[in-house]
Image 1 (cartoon, rainbow, N blue to C red):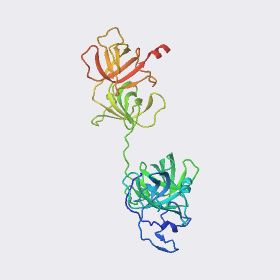
Image 2: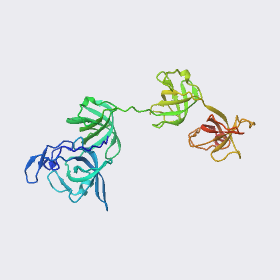
Image 3: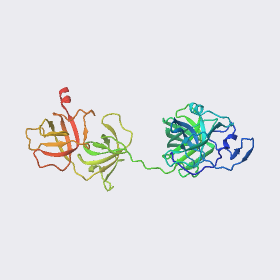
Image 4: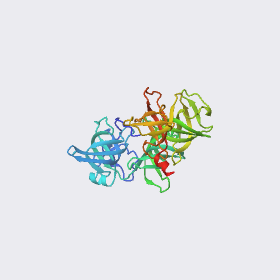
Length: 408
């Protein structure tokens, strides 16, 4: 939600000198300007400003810089800026009294930082601070997702923009609340829906309830709800027991686990790679699948949860079972497999163990692929004509090892 803008705002550099002490830190000040001689003139200048707390301070040979994060004074102003503090930068409170920069930082005071029109295109943007006006009231903010609509309010779960802590807060809309969409257009509260991303400035008052509640006068809403791809596993069905299928492989990029037991029922969507619907009969042991499921699962190994969607792939699998044997024929990152765990060597193979090989252990602890371990291995279709044949291992399931056998 920290979208940056470069359009100049509609507030004067000196307007805040005339703001009364009772003004809220979320309110837009009146469009007036104080001359410093006790006269109020009509606003003439247009100067952008960022309104928030100082989150970083640097003072070295390159200069003196502060980072101010919060919201733009106008919707098109920057919500976060790195500002150069020069000898010409004025720092004072709403009464026009000079305030030390150290005092502002130590007390985490809210400021309205007015800056010049020349800013960089970086994130956050950089510019020169013209004036810092210290506010009498404070506020905090949250960036997150709307989880629930309330009467005249919303429940937001996300990250506090200052502490970076994860939190949930109930925000009640003030009578003069300002609600904008991602394009800076004013919208009504009725437009907001669960799942939308928001940035809100609220407080300082907050209840001690769980979750805490506060009042907001400023909300920016991304009205486009991006479809979230659920977590999942790209793997192989290694076992089917009743309505449960075991899938082992690789977690998907958006999240998931390598080893999961999934419950399949009438709510599970089963399709092929073309998206055509299939029945549960299409789920066969050793079939390749992409399995999608929710984020909530049991805290045991392997994880267990409900299958939301299973995509059955057409590609075949190639599988062997046997025991890893010691052999001088293998090199680094290779294992010799006594297929069938018998006295014959005619059908034995050597497996290349590469970075793409997924190895699953009985209790989730990496005990290594050592001689004596019994395994089930899925491998590539290509194999050398040598004796023993050599191929790349895709998935190796260690069903037992020496340590386990000895304990029995």
